[in-house]
Image (cartoon, rainbow, N blue to C red; front, side, top):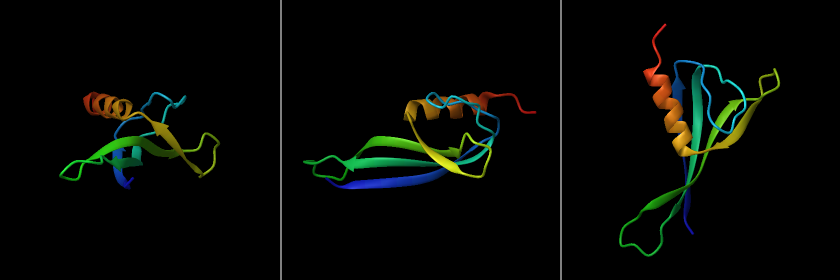
Length: 88
């Protein structure tokens, strides 16, 4: 099975929450990693998402980061709420 990982940086303008993370995350840039696997048997290359992770500051008050598995729909919801929040 052919696998690939995509990385992108997503910026939140406001503090936000994502289901599965039990704390408010600060605004800023976050790295999102998406793992995908190739769908076999097609006449063209196509991939399906199998995992989405986000790098967030660790819960402890140090500079460590942790990778947390999240749902892609939950990430989209958080981005939509951030974009619709009033500007300060």
